[in-house]
Length: 376
Image (tube, rainbow, N blue to C red; front, side, top):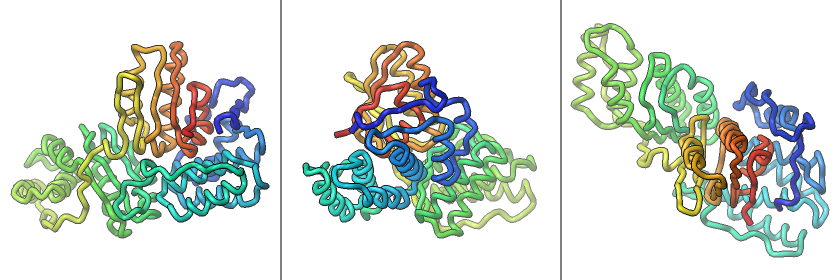
């Protein structure tokens, strides 16, 4: 499969995406982003189908990165349905990987029959390691792991979380890495959670105690300021079931702002027991480096860990066999990390990449700053 793709630069330099990539709005609709990326980063050439294959691969990769699994599957299934026997194996493999990643066993079984008939060979197996970890067999909820600071800079990120949550009916939010917050950031988080509740979106939250402890050191009784911080602190204390501490803070709030505090209510947000490790993790091993899970956002810890791991090595192998998804912001950050390592004369090999992630990496030009090896 890897030999079927070749990346060329739209500006003829062969150096990957130009600086225009940094100005793109990664929260835009899938097709629009794909077309914008095609203009900025050049086309993916597939030997059999040229631009037709490239456009479909880009659109599907964009949709999957945005959490729109069903739309990505529709794009791919419509396309392969029109191919002649023996044509377009990379597109078939993308579709099969997507069905596995989405937990769609029935669709996968139907597709492998068509694949075997088209290519007259055994199809890829169903690998339970690819399937979502949710208990009901449905695709895992979209996930976001916040960085160290809760400020107005998270506004666009929260818009994407709000949109993804409404589409999927569930969302996971990890707050465990937060170390500071301002009034605007607290207001944005409270509004996000309220909007998701109003839309009947199931919210799983991690790190409420971390936020409560952090905010507890930033509010001061008797000082009439940072009201949103106070309110978020009370929200987080309800989330952690700390009723005695909640009552103490509520009394201080009433005295400070001369108004009634929010009432104690039963916890309405499910606890996300594990923290960022559930969303994405990176493991340093003697024989290499492992990326797994869903790596989201510009400040993803696994990318910083990769850069640190590579600092003392000239050849780095990254096992991506359990890497399920990258979003666009993280893919852009990964390109920057890998480009810096390439500039230092280091060779990074991304091994066992699933077809859907590989397509996004090619769109972003990552195959020009690292070596990609697709999973067989």
